[in-house]
Length: 276
Image (tube, rainbow, N blue to C red; front, top):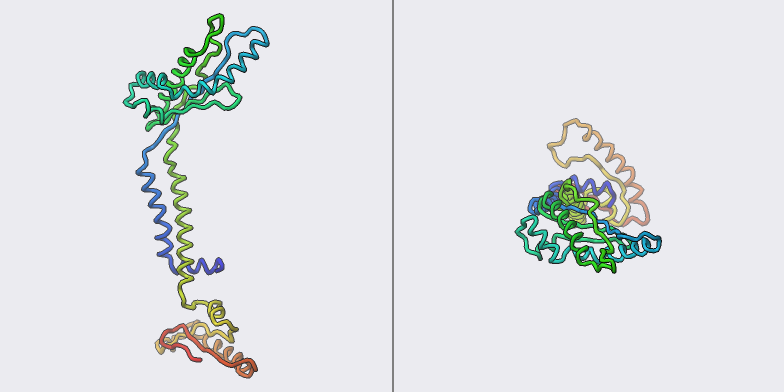
């Protein structure tokens, strides 16, 4: 089917097209309305070495900070940190429930730790992320192995507190509705094309020629097959004699041709039927 055929089929079956297109959009709207909003806040920690007045000591300290940062990030979900956060913020969540809302990661070769918290409101997400980051720094320094001078080798500092999220990360209304619309259009076009292919009626000259498997002698366009159409004097009715004249001119060579055996005359008006 060409693009013109598809557009013609859409116009002819517009109700089917609209219903198939609206169904996924309505489903996307229902999902968006039923999904609780989720907000996300992220705080950033910096792991820095302490001491080290000489270049070798500073290098060793920086290397130690890089090595320790991933281990400290894993402490964000530890009971020692989460219990303190629950007590600080007076949360009604359990440690296991809060653990599903908190995560921390440190990029490879970096001394930064990103602490992320998710909650049902922006204020809660920001407060949890900042408190987890603060408690993580305290816990990391407390469990660090001191050196011979009883000094903590690295220090974890909150360098970028979590800001108030500008909006929820889920659901994404615009994205979900756009996906629903795209899916709806795909389903609608597919349904119209399949319905058109399943329809055995011949509607165009191209379809007639394809179904007949032979060439067409002529096409009479605009003929009304009924007495009620006579005498109207419309432009469409005036073209009928000219169409029949062209048909008669083309019919004579076709009937005298050696390869001509059968001639089929058909009409789109049901009561006229066809003759062969």
